[in-house]
Length: 312
Length: 281
Image (cartoon, rainbow over all chains, first blue to last red; front, side):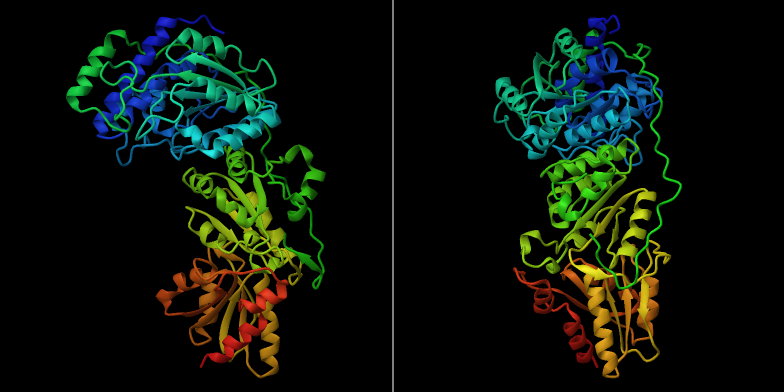
């Protein structure tokens, strides 16, 4: 693990919050408060932990990240902009027709493997990628960020069961437990113990953290891959975190700030924000690419007309 | 990938030969489709296999794979009433409709072993979402081993000058159409028979050309509900050319029975085709 500057990561998290607010305010729609809760986790992952080549999102041994809670798209776009992949000015074109920074992420973007936004599907795709890594003898990890409302979806538990059975210790689920869903608080709010028991029941190792304490987040991330179980990090967070009038307030899901509100929020965040541009990102191991060449030919078939064969 | 049906779908043959390329996903089809999508995202060519009806519960995952322009191959077996005694909970009668509606999808429905193998090869070689519909009953091989099956094509199997109508079918009903053609021939009535193994993209030029020689009239026959299947594909694409389409399909809720009984009762067997042909002016 590289020598990590906690203050820098906190600063980058606030920069990501600022981008989430300014881009959604410019667009007139989006989910800034859902972004704010996950900003510390995101900054830590992208600038303090994951090993990837930011200039080459398709590199075959990059750590993979799936934003299963796809409505936090502005946060994902902000993170990649801060790596320098594209100018941060592009973020203000969020959701505009013709701009690839769509309302929810799609693979038009080089750093998006699967479209998300229809909640509950990202963990399955992540499990598939983790299994593929093993088959390809690559050492990348797959990180999947989920929302607490999202994990009511049964498909999440199908994926959890699969990951437990196949001991996918290169798969890390992070639950951004910000207590508030779309129209009301989630069923279990901040009762992390309930989520812990559920993931443990499916064969996962679970760590719960203060989702706004970057040191804690870094500490549990340092344990990735240590045993033969997939890892679930349950992060206790606050929706709208970082902005006094948004934090932990119901009624803000999917609402952009108006110009005045945005200005107030930025005034709070700007003094403690830092850019991620130029921050060194750990490189992935250079391992041979898997062979995906199609076979030269297929074996010949030898049926006789009249043979009775089911097409299945 | 398999959903614990490999001894019915015979995916177990792949498992025995290539165990390191096979993943048992157990009875969790939504996850199976997601895992397959993940494999596709990592450059692999994933084939997810189960009974076609069980893909319906993964329809959101399939829809999202469409949005993702994923490289995903779905093979759904045990389609239609022709599965017989297991009854409607195991019968896919909506799957063609469901898969045609997916952005950029390819929907294939081979009638014999040769065409199945040829289509599978192409599915593996081409990018995108491909759905292959397979059947439970044994059907005769009707094509030579070297016959090509381009995606978007159709095969004219019977055609003579003076044919009364064009019958378009696929899968098990293609064989019923061939039987019907023999029966009608004995009565001096000719029908053109087309194997529409590629439902999307449809071999519409082949079908249109044949229909224009038979009074611009087509009868479609499918082991699927009326809505959204082969009949709707043909009618939808050929209506601008003024082709009339009479659809034979399963029009009421099926139940357990012998495959042949069910095909007859639900009006998609050779006798039903003969009756329909004769009923036309």
